[in-house]
Length: 183
Image (cartoon, rainbow, N blue to C red; front, side):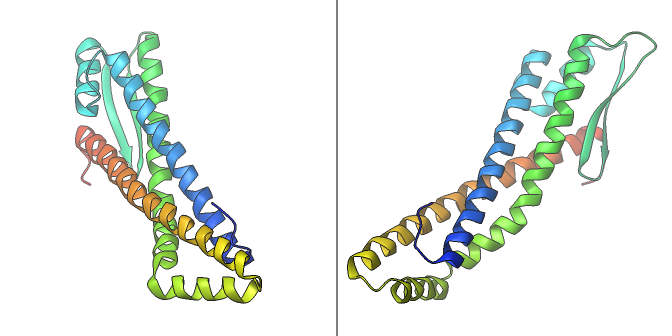
C-alpha cells in the first residue's frame, strides 16, 4: 500500500494489508496441505476422496476425522506402530485445521475494515483529509492517486478474501461431513 501522508488513513490501509497478507498465507497453507494430503493418499485434491483413500489403504487401522468446533484432526486407533504416511497425514490435517480456522477468523475483521474504507462517503472524507494535510498541489495530486491505487488494491483484496473464506468454509464442511458432525 502506498502512503497518503495522513497517519489515520495510512494506518487503516497498513492494517488491511497486514490482515490480508495473513489471510493469503493461511490460504497458501491450506492449498499446500490439501496437495500434500493428495500426494500421501495418491488421489485427487478432493478432501473426501483423500480421506477415503487413506481409509482404504490402511483398512486395518481405525481412521476417523474428529471434529470439535472448528478444530479437526485425523484420529488413528491401532495397537501397532502408526505408519509414517499416517503420521504425516495427521500433521497435515492439524495444519489444515489451523489455517482454515485462522483464515475465517481474520475474515470478519478484514471484511468490516474493507467495507468501511470502500464506502463512498469515506472515500470523499479521505480525499478531503489528504487535501487538508497537504497544501502543495502536486503533493495532493500524487497522494490522491496513491489513495485511488490503495482503494483499487483493497477492492481486489476484498474479492480474493471472500474467495479464500469460501474455500476455507468448504474445507470445514467437507471434513464435518467425513466426521459425521453436523455443520
